[in-house]
Amino acid sequence: MTCVLHRNVSVTPPSIVSAKGVWVTDRDGKTYLDAVSGGAAVSCIGHQDPRVTDAIREQLDKVSYVHSSFFTTNPAEELAEQLIRQAPKGLSRVLFCSGGSEAVEAALKLVRQTWVERGEPQRTRIISRRQSYHGATLGALSVGGNLARSEIYKPMLFEGHWIEPCYSYRLQQDGESLEEYGLRAANLLEEALLELGPETVGAFIMEPVVGATLGCAPAAPGYLRRIREICDQYGVLLVFDEIMCGMGRTGTLYACEEDGVVPDLLTTAKGLGGGFQPIGAVLVGDRILQDLYAGSGALKHGFTYMAHPVACAGALAVQKVIHEDRLLEKVQARGAQFIQSLREEFAEHPHVGDIRGKGLFVGIELVADRSAKTPFDPGLNLNATVKRLTLEEGLMTYPGGGTIDGRRGDHVVFSPAYTVTEPEITEIVSRFSKGLNRALETINQI
Ligand code: PMP
Picture 1 (cartoon, rainbow, N blue to C red):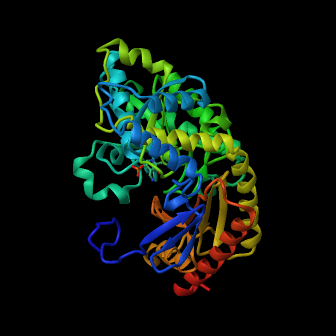
Picture 2 (picture 1 turned 30 degrees about the vertical axis):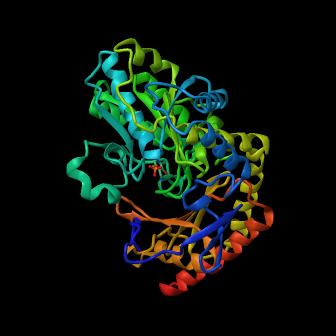
Picture 3 (picture 1 turned 120 degrees about the vertical axis):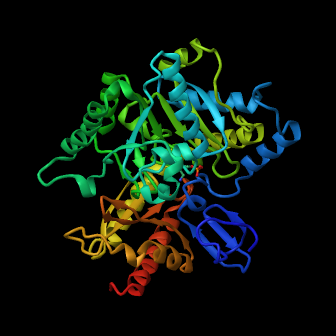
């Protein structure tokens, strides 16, 4: 293998030669049912929709590239308008980039520039949450709370500040309602602000539904609203990272819509281009736009491939498919079916501790002891075995694990395309059940 892939460079993964809908085929003719939209909640309308590939080809025939400091283009403007038309009120401009980490990096720099323009340059701190992942670049890693991912880069990162995530399965207390827990979890932000000095904090960044690092843990009812209140009270900017949970994945186009909470900045990526093109975006709120441009009058940030015309044309076509095919309705219906099927399949399973999520963003947490919620010994590396054996069963899943103050919850993320059918959901649950039980047998747990 000459192409360097991350993770284990000594193992050559299957080489994929074709893909259609929720199925991908490797060089040996083996097919895999894709329960994770290409592997990481990306291919949200399924693989190879000709409406998108045609739009990309047409754009390539017109103009493939111009630098955004000289020109804008039709696809960039149309896509920005479409995103803003459907966005929570208060978000009014879009900055495009090539992926999730770039979007977070841009958002962090917009936060910095806003505070400089506002005459409060001492607001340099960013608060985020433990166990969070916001990207692989150094700025995004600095705010990320998944220390396993950032550990070796620590000397190169800026100082981070973290509060506990909203993670009801493990952190809600006995006798506490979900709403009470949500309020208590959100109030941790106020405590952190008071400790650091609110006048030193520029922003708080969080995922409304935590994907890769906590296995689809949604915010408790009222949590986002209270977070917004606290940010307003102390003048702190609120950034929602919807790179994984946005663009329809949870059943609404923007995950924060359901709670009616509008951030100052919103990052999105994966489902934006649906895997047809690499693209990310930051949606920018009115509240900071004026200040941002009032001072120097120019954005002090830029990438060569910002608003790439072909990427924008591809993403625009993906967004049109979501709209025309009424895919959000399908996400809601299939998501409910998926969670119900998993709950039926694993109702008595001793090692399935929690089944959670929103829309087609569904997570399972695996535990050694279901009633005590005891996590598996991290040394068993269960999530890697689940990934390998479910793949052998012809199913793509996204297992992960992470420590919460020394505790580990192995989990599995499912994020199939919005086009997934009822029989395909049934097949996902059946293949997963087989793969999971084989993995548990392998580590001698059943
Ligand atoms: N934020 C979140 C919430 C993510 O899930 C990811 C990717 N898993 C990123 C940021 C980084 O995106 P990318 O890998 O496209 O740079």
